[in-house]
Length: 300
Ligand SMILES: Nc1ncnc2c1ncn2[C@@H]1O[C@H](COP(=O)(O)OP(=O)(O)OP(=O)(O)O)[C@@H](O)[C@H]1O
Image (tube, rainbow, N blue to C red; front, side, top):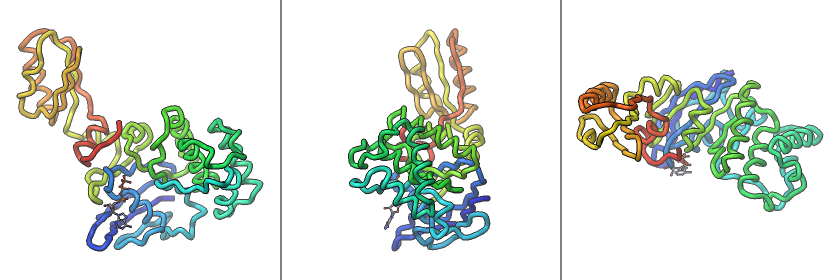
């Protein structure tokens, strides 16, 4: 079971929101869709879900065109959350999950499982409007997964969650992946993406600026981060060719350089000056890559 997106494009009048992206997501993997605000993530999701017709290109699941008619196999957490404030959690989930073809007994069973898992069993008969934003999000997540979809699309699932709830959701998502659910999610929080995804695509103005396996991307990315500790002033390194950024704190200097050769130049330069207590070359974080490639701001 594979999600295949081929040359997907969306134009709104003359504005190209998504500009010919292609990708493949294998069953049971977790795929990250990244990009700054307005890069085209939500528009891509809507086309994948069959909620928006592409201007060009196709989306298939297991070789067949994906449309919202096949809604039972899809779970979707939309970016703009849409729950009815006056309904109780139970009423809301019964209403939404019946649309997915579930019967009431199963809905209640699954609902209780997830409420327990999210440590909020007492919310069953609370009105949505009585819950905090973060807890409403848990309910919205439940509405995306209660029917055990094969394909789960999560638009910014971690936004607005505190670290404890964010971790809880992360574990839930990982468990779903381990039971074979195919998951595509977007996030501005690069650390979450680094922890969860094997493969990713990074969009800028609708175009893929980076795509592939996360580890490969990091390994082959030219830019490196260096950490240095020495007993003398390191500010002179600012003028070395290929230094992108130098940040000196109390103990360490953190330097971003264009490539490994620049790291070697710096190593030689400081070794000539005297004793070096620490010299460490690291791959760039996804956060650094995001800023470099996609522009805009990312949350760490
Ligand atoms: N219905 C629409 N009509 C016209 N333009 C649209 C429509 N939907 C999206 N756009 C435009 O398409 C571009 C991509 O928007 P989209 O919502 O897909 O971005 P995004 O990557 O999800 O951004 P964010 O991170 O801010 O949610 C934006 O320039 C947006 O203004």
